Length: 427
Image 1 (cartoon, rainbow, N blue to C red):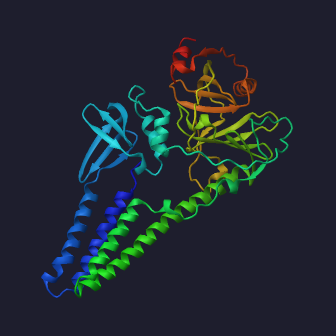
Image 2: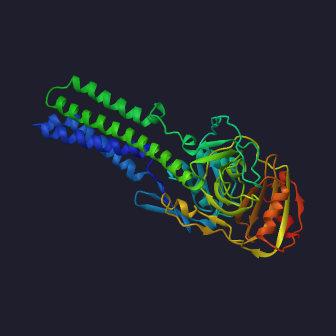
Image 3: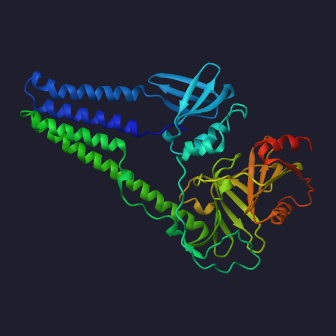
């Protein structure tokens, strides 16, 4: 996992390109070194400085064994086993070991939430100090309140199917992913700065004699074209990503869905895209969403695929009650997968893999739903399901782990996200 090019890198590389373009244009039009030195020399120095800054900027590479930081030709590595703390300073995640300290900006990664989960999975629990809300703020930015969906008449659910509360009538998936329109938000501060620099260069060119004036004008036209192409290309990528999201979700749940609190359910009740508030602030698995196959007659979850983060929830996601139970031995029900379902292989080239065997179970009861979380013997989250009430959760567990007796013990939800583990160990 490697940092991608951010806006500052783009600005520096654009400055380098423009500097070399202006210098070469002025060099072709100049008859003496003195004529070249005033404008061409300045542009060459500016481009060289920008290129040097790009070369010397720190770049982080994360692999399974260590965090590597490249600065020029130097490499500094921090093995995950030696990390003593992971903290936040502003918008940066600071990883500290006994002899080194490195800051990571999640915004420089293609998938900030995946980067944070990657780091958390490889450092000790004692070193990890970020709570889930901090992770969401780092990965997804400030929370935004979603626009309310249009009110429609409730449709008839399949016989025996129990939808979560506040289900709507059929809604087209395409309307849930409106294509963006070009606006001020698509022009970044870097674009404005580059545009100002180009205009300033054009203004300076008016007072220059030939051939410098012509050279700067040619470079200005090229810079304006490059800047416009950069802005448009970024907008096109955003628009196509939104269109792909709509197609991807429609491929799984169908073109029409019923909207419930935290879920989009297909009209036949057999498939569901789940992005409940508890999924978005999950204290164990990180922000995520699920693609699930459902039994329409019982509401039982037959297959659950854990996918990437789905948004930000505003509010308190602490459960009203929490219970913990322990299985006699680890059991893999073969229903929980990390990745996307086969229907989405066209858009996402990533094979889903089983999440593993469960040993400890946690039931969290909220105002509108009940969640069952499953953990391995090594405290890895290996699955979670959402249910209308506790009875539905018990039926789900009886189906996944038939014939297994589970003794449930209460745990105070305010005691911390891992307080249940000591209760489970005492069972």
